[in-house]
Image (cartoon, rainbow, N blue to C red; front, side):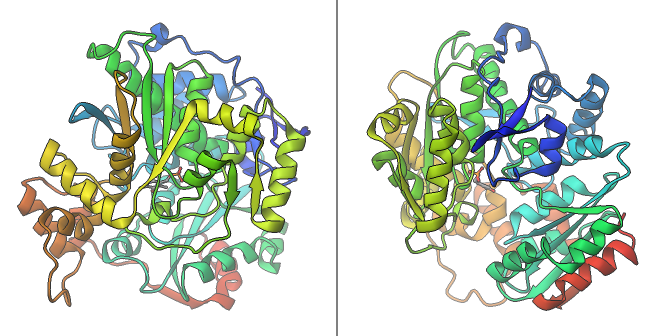
Length: 496
Ligand SMILES: *Cc1c(COP(=O)(O)O)cnc(C)c1O
C-alpha cells in the first residue's frame, strides 16, 4: 500500500512514514489509490472478535507493519482500556441503532483511534533511534484522549496545553489528575485560540530546532493522521456484522449511517468502509449551528467566511473540516490538480465551489442536516422520553438529523460519540427542563448526581472516580514561555 498526497501523486510514503509525518510536505493529506482494490470479505470477518477484525483491516491498509507488530499494537490499545469486551457495542434506539463509541478511558469516540495511533507511531519509530514529542492544545476533550493514548508509550512524550479556567470542571480534573511518566499537562494564561496559535508557533521555534538537534521531533497527532483514520473504519464493519448476527439484515443488505461531524474524520472512515466493500447506502452528515458542511453538501459551495458559534456540542464547533479533502479526492477520481486548486482557493479566500456534476456524485452517498442548540436539547428529551435512551448533545444532533434523513426500509446506525455523563448539565436540563436558579457553587459532580438520580443510570466509573483522585498537574505559564517549557520538560524533567 503506497500513500501519496491528495495534491500530488509524486509525494509518496509507506504507511509507517505517513503515520510519523501526519501531513504531507505540500500541505495535502496522505491517501492511497489502492483503497478501492482492498476488499474485505464479510464472511471472512463474520466470526471474528473486535480485535481480530481490527487486525485484519490494519494488515490490509497498513501493510508494511508486520503481523507481530499489529498484534502487539492491537493488544496494547484495546486490552483493559475499554469497559466492554465488544469495544463498540451496538444497541437499539427506537427502531434504529446506536453505535456506542464512548466506552474508552475518556468516554468519547476519539479514544478508539487515540488508543491505537500511539502504538502505531511507537512501532514505526523502533530502531530509528529517534523520539517524538507530541504537543497539543486542547479545549478539553481531545487533549485528554491523547494523554490516555500516549501515556507510558516507548520513545514518545506528550505535553498538552489548555486554557486556564476555560475548560469544564470535569475536563479540568480529567487532565489535572493525569498519570503517566511521559506526560505533562500545562495551563496557559489565555483562551483556546491563544493556546492553539502558541502550539502552531512551536513547530517553527528555536525550541523545536534545539529538540530536533537532540533527535526529538515535534508532532501533533491530529485527526488527519492515517493512524487515526484507519482504526475508525473498524467499527463500521463491526456494527454491520452485529446487525447480521441479530438477523436485522442479511449479508449484502444496505445500511445507513448517521454521523455527528466536525472535522469529517469519523464520517470519512465510513466512506472508506464503503470503498472497501461495506454495503453502505447513505452516510448522513450531521452538523450543529456551524453548518458549513450542510451548506456544502446541499449547494456545492464551501464557505468558511461566517461567524463561529459556540454550541453545546463543542467538539463539532469547526469551520474547516480538514478530512473533507480526502473525500473530494476519491469522489473526483483522484484529481490532484482539482484538489490543489480547491485548497488554494480555501486558504486564499476561505471559499471554494465544486461543479454540479461532482456535487451530484457526492449527493449520491452523502446526505446532510443540522440542529441548533434548542433542537439539540429537544432531541435529547425526545430520545429519552420516546426510547428511554440517554444521549449526549453531539449524538443528539445526529438523532435529530437522522430522523429527517433516513431511508424508509433501510436500517440506520447512529454513531454515538460521547457519554451523556461528559455533558451532565446540558443533558440534565434538557430532560428535566429545570434551570437551576442559583447555579453558583454547583459543579460538574452536582449535575452528575442529579442526572444519575433522575434517570436511574450510573455515571461511568472513570468520571465518578475523578472526585477522589489527587490533582498532580498544576503548571501554569504565559504563552511566551511555551518554548522554554517544552525544552525544560523534554530535557531536564526527562519525560522520555
Ligand atoms: C471529535 C468529535 C466529533 C466530531 O468528529 P470528527 O471526526 O471531527 O468529524 C463528534 N463528537 C464528539 C463527541 C467528538 O469528540
